[in-house]
Length: 300
Image 1 (cartoon, rainbow, N blue to C red):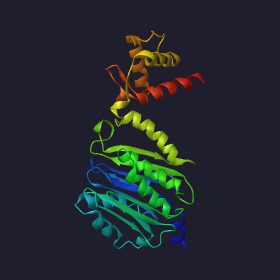
Image 2: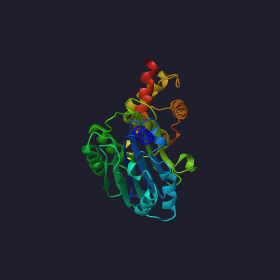
Image 3: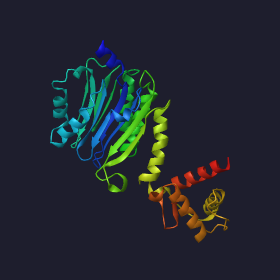
Image 4: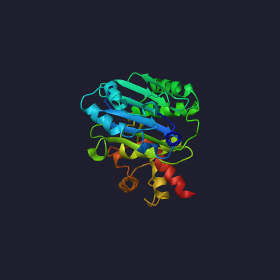
């Protein structure tokens, strides 16, 4: 009875664990009918590997597995060593990718239906207590066909899984973790992306909303084609927004004077968008959009 109770309280989860072959980034995205899934499932270390441990999760698989990978074990060897002598092995579900892009996944016989996994090139999708096999199949297809970087592929996969029914018990939390050597804030750690939603009725959508702000604040992923020159009508609209928000006193036709530049810099710094600051007379489209939304919200 005790074991069954523990099983029933375990995370019903679907996730993707992957390595970007173009730059070596490792990433995991996960959604679950379980609070704070980001504290349980995703484990990764830059230039070493990534692990998703779920179902009746053995959280020790995370740090122990990364230690094994760091010691030179392959994903397959690491999985075998983790499962060895684990009395709960058939209740576990785990996906692992190593520094060479080798991937392995395990779905124990006692994982609650529907449970299964798919191994692709450099990634694995796994899930338990799902609406059906299509959840994993759609995730894999979305990951393989999505344009963009590893982050875009991970979000495409998790959305496809949810669209196919996802976790049959519902939604509660979600998380995305991507590691890159010195990819964290000011290069002080490897957490390139670390965003979590611990409790929400629509955690994937909320994760995307928060990530967009994180992306604006900390990352530099925007395509250079999204740069716009501050002139003409755009200059006027930016000044109007800054006036509305109280950063600028008046509008100077279609020119963008020193006062407007100073106001834009102040607004940028206030919103922690220093990473998006420009000094060449251009502005990112994402910054324009956020500024206009900010001004609109200030008027209502």
